Length: 218
Image (cartoon, rainbow, N blue to C red; front, top):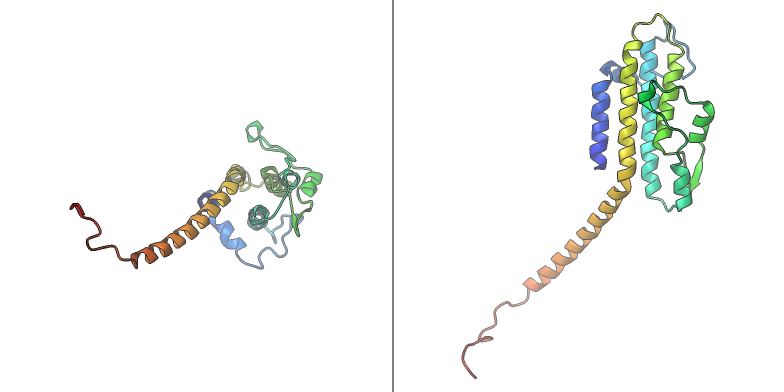
């Protein structure tokens, strides 16, 4: 289930986003001078900003998935779980494009939560979506009003954000079950190994005993 979700996510991003964004952002030095505050200029065109925005969001999403994996492999208390998955905001795309999240919300989402020896950020789907919307609105505010390229891609971006968040939410609910199944599988594998050892020992014992059973009265 876990790997199927990740595969769906990868396929969705590939289908929804123009492939040139991936090829541009793959260059390690391509985004070195492009930050969330860099203005859109002829030297740093909009396509480069979009590619770098996706690169930053991809890195953040990978971090969230990685931390989710670490969290469920850690020893945590119910209170810590409530802190790590605390719902800090809710967005409804049916009501129209969500507004830009406040910087205080982003700071709250990124606030360190110590579990054992590891620092976690808020792993709720709302915080993941907040990061995406924060990046989007920062870029949207810098796009020239007469730009014809950007409006055509806004719906695609929101579809990507929604799909990624929905898949992450499904994984969030299913991942504990996945770990339980994984543990059960490992226990069954150990049992089968021991069972095979017992079977091999039984095979060494004689299975035929002459005159051990007879219909004649003795």
